[in-house]
Image 1 (cartoon, rainbow, N blue to C red):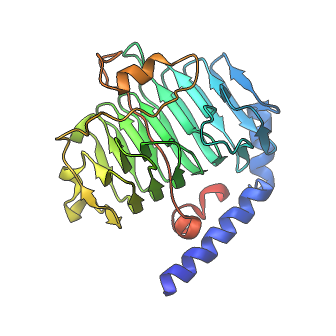
Image 2: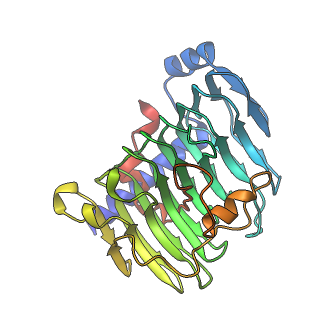
Amino acid sequence: MQIIGRTATAAALLLAGLGTGTASANQEVLAENTCRVIDALPHEITEPGRYCLRTHLITPSSDGAAITISASDVSLDLRGFSITSTVRDTRKRVVGILARDQKNITIQRGKIEGFRYGVLITDSAAVSAGHQISRLLVSESTAAGISVTGASSTIEDNTVSRTGGGGSYAAGISYSGSLGRIRRNWVLHTFSTARGGYAAGIDLLQGPTQSVQHNHIFRVAGPSSSFGIRCGAPFADPRFGNVVEHAAIPFSDCTPSPDPSPSPYPYPSPYLSFDRAAGGSAPLSAQTLGFSALGGMLLAAGLLVSKQFSS
């Protein structure tokens, strides 16, 4: 109970910091002097470089993406601010941050709330690689919180909470690609709401070629299968430090696949063809497309990310 109390306190402090976009005064001045500021949504990034927020941003759109990254070698620092969708319809297709067929995308330090996919990085040409997603608080995604397709990518120090409600598929973090690193994430309360798919705290669509360490997954549920770490049987060894609580299958292998194979429909236009790939047709690239849905309770958020916005 002492741990829960400390966790709740830390979570409250984290949310207070997010509400004011806290960082030290020196950090804020330095960031604004060295990055291109995004002041309104929707926004498309078309050139490499450093980008940042200086205020909380809201989008009322139910489709498309709040921020689209259409260039490689992009660093997006939310600087403790938030990107929020005001649409509460579970059928919405809007994405928080979207990138397709790019390399070396960094997204860090902020809050993403209320989208179908919080962060969605896809690949249709076997070129996606080298991404880093860190120190995000992603909540209330209806299908996926952080979904990354791309080799040699890192997903670390994120808290993903309260994900699901959009259909038969939900996953807190989804990763497809070789040599990936999924570390020190909290994935809390992931749930699917229809039969025929599954819910997963962490979904590894390319099996155990990744490094998956020191993640905490709490409460995964659904009317069909629910997994703590799907395709994660090799990472059940205590040496990896992964903790799964309240999931029907804490660590699973990759067979048998659910039938029918889940599809996180409806996929946001103009990428409807990816739904067919997820539904079992021939893959669109050498890497299997991955989707993920974040879910959880903010109760444990502070344990992981209470220091995220002060460094």
